[in-house]
Image (tube, rainbow, N blue to C red):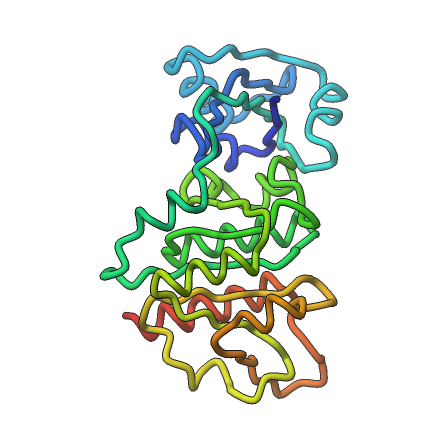
Length: 250
């Protein structure tokens, strides 16, 4: 199975990384025919250096492949290698708990822009991984996710699990303290101790945390707000929460 990623920045990250954490590599680089730009020339050089096929195609063909993502004249086709996606259990066992890892958990985030933005923020915050459910979430292989993640898919492990609540329990048994973000929580984010092995659990757009996920958290926190809006976009809330943890750790 192949997937497409679009946009100069996302494609450059894929070419430089060589292989994503999903075990995928760039099979073909497609450039809009007649498109000239120094950054595109750099991509062509990287692709040829790696022995990757470069094709020059009409703009209409790129539009179809990019599936609505702004492609800037560049689309890359990724192919799955024989190496399977890293399993959650193996990833969890490999973590150095003494390093007090920070992990992001996303409960059914269905908007691909939000999912990609959350993964990008997790990578920027130095997260040891992002845990998402396999079902009822945005398609990880969507070019929209890849574009929004801006190369982070190849730099931070993204673990897809069958049962998020069960995976949370396994993380707790391994030594994680799980903090769920919920608007109705009594405790504020800025009063919590986020310096240990922490899993920050973010809910879906509109519905927030599901009941079993909420009950599986060790602590529920809210982000105090002075304005009249009731809640933040999940990708914004993720950024606020992760970088509060970063602030406390620095």
